[in-house]
Length: 161
Ligand code: FEO
Image (cartoon, rainbow, N blue to C red):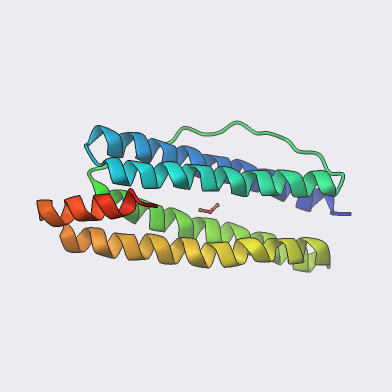
């Protein structure tokens, strides 16, 4: 049994995960329009991953007999200056998501809600991976910036995700 405030916080997180999905879908579309098919593919996969994060929370609320409230999803930006900016914003956003997950952990601890604490460990680990991946690709994108051949190879690599 989870508290009403935890139920509300998880509903907000479902919205945040869906907003993340929207953000990455938007980056995918922008990358495609700029000719980066591999980057576009990478962000399309990221879109799916964020929807999985959202659905995992949905299933958890259902398993706890709690209500799922689907809140309105705010608009996302539609254009970035290039691949470097996309991954800068991705890293920045993932850091923000990590802080949201940690706040949920704080709330679960405060509620002495051991089930939710246990459930959230998946997201704690996932965020370490999300930040590391965004950082790694950002560094690579900065390294190849301005070099067409190297940028092409990076795009190909990201397309293999
Ligand atoms: Fe759902 Fe990228 O964190």
